[in-house]
Length: 140
Ligand code: DAT
Ligand code: MG
Image 1 (spheres, rainbow, N blue to C red):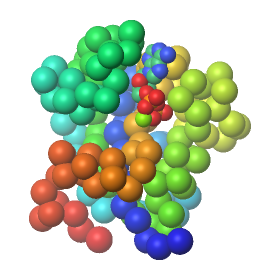
Image 2 (tube, rainbow, N blue to C red):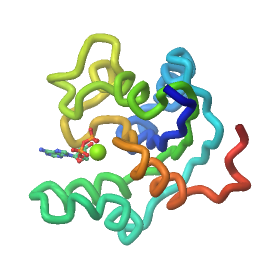
Image 3 (cartoon, rainbow, N blue to C red):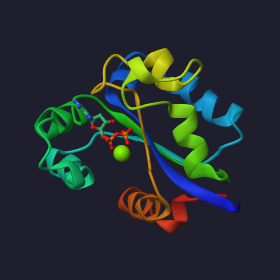
């Protein structure tokens, strides 16, 4: 498997509880290099665009309100098989189903307030990285 880049968000529930460093340490311990990182606060329109694929889902409004409730940390992670590796480190969407040692098992509060986002495929990773970062901000 080749070196890939994936897009990550440390979500409001985690930034609010000062977990940014602990979560970033888990990415690094898994062999993922943080090649871009910034703390931002999304507007409602940005959150709705980012999660547009979920706009028909019953939790969409709640999800967008949550994502704008506090600052977030957006990052680009690079490494061997980075998309799948990051999803593995994150754990299942629902923390009740997440494996031991995963970020969501350790830190997530609920299925909605689940501490991290990670891209699910090469196409979405490329789109999500381009939504938040310019090429100049990616320092491999
Ligand atoms: P993931 O973040 O694991 O890729 P997803 O893409 O299916 O999961 O959903 C995006 C986010 O939407 C998820 O991280 C939290 C929220 N969400 C998903 N299912 C939910 C549900 N049943 N109730 C509340 N929020 C939900
Ligand atoms: Mg997803």
